[in-house]
Length: 267
Image (tube, rainbow, N blue to C red; front, side, top):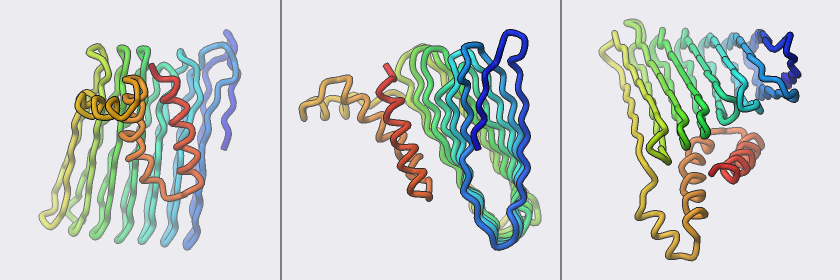
């Protein structure tokens, strides 16, 4: 789905709503690509609603190409029935401000969701990913991984919540957020949350942030790379770990190429 915008000084606010029902025993791979082709900054507000019926599979990929002053807000709600699988990947590296707000309900037994993403920000960009996974039935599974690289007074935020209701015994929930801060003026805020009301569960979360490892940079320079090339290679390896979670090989290759081009632009 291509959302292509060209705003004007009189009209630069856009709202879009997408509603899908993934029928029983069906599978859908979909990419939503948002593009501002105009010169004026825009505010883009997107709402997604997906209902996954029994034994269905949804693979949803979000990619945007916004200008430095654009604002993008994406709110998604996902309702999963028995044995359904939801895979989502967010690529956040364009626009002045972007936020993805995802609420996923695992409503029936053996439903699963996998929410992963990459944030790459510089020059005062602000990117956020917020998730809430509601485990509402037993034997449900969730997995989240977000990798972020921040530079030149930029800011990244990840707020992830796993809520396990009393009926959701045998829940398996995992969440991990890692960030690299390439200068002292950038900021990363992480708020992992576990809210558990069942006693037979396996849930974990982790969050780390720090600089590039100087020993790794030195090692790569000793093998012939200059310092800038060494840093780019380490950043690429760090972010590729999240892209590897994509199970559609064609889409995975596409995101690898987009990311490599963006890292080359990164100072």
